[in-house]
Amino acid sequence: MKAVIFVLTALLAVAGKAHAECGKVPQYSEKIDPVECPLSAIQLPNYENATFYYQCSKANTTSKSTATLTTCPTNTYFNYAMQECMTCDTYFPSTQCSGLKINVTCVSIATTVAPTVAPTAAPTVAPTVAPTVAPTVAPTETTVAPTTKAPGTTVPVPPTDAPTTATTVSDDIITPSGTTISVPQPPSPNDSNVPTPVTPAPTAPVINDTPPTAAVAGTD
Image (cartoon, rainbow, N blue to C red; front, side, top):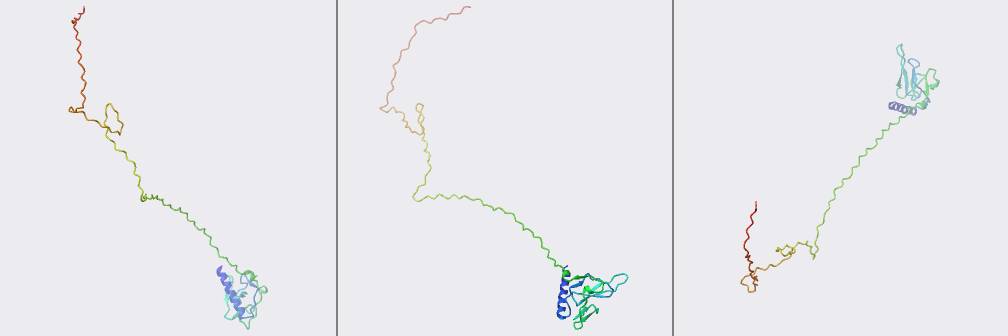
């Protein structure tokens, strides 16, 4: 399709140049389409550009006549009535397509312009959304500030238990724990103030002066 559009554009450009070089070349409103040869070895006009014409080949028993687009020599223009390319000073317009006496199909040149093919739009690809990565939260380190002793202050010292004093345990006195008791030393015989123990008076024994009694023998 692009090649056809390029060829048509080139033909129109050449036709415009031909019209500019030779004012006798008219702007035709019809052309032959499709180009089929009604007769063998005939030349058909190219109504879109007078510097070209269609040369029909000679038909034979095995094939039909085909039309080939042919270029006129430089500064010459094809005339259908004369069946040749002519210079501008001798040229006269060819018969309109609808006025030809041969069996051809004529169509309007304005309606046969090849349509412009719009370029195919590439499909829009949706952007890939990268997954959102949760930020890594660094563990919070708790720093304990050191205790600074203000000048002139005394740091309190925890209380210390008083040392336990050895306690003398007596059989008669229960001394509370933690109480210190002074135990006196035993008296010496040489001390003058040592009391003399009281000696009790002797007691006379009781004497039994009764004669002993013999044991009575048992009877059988």
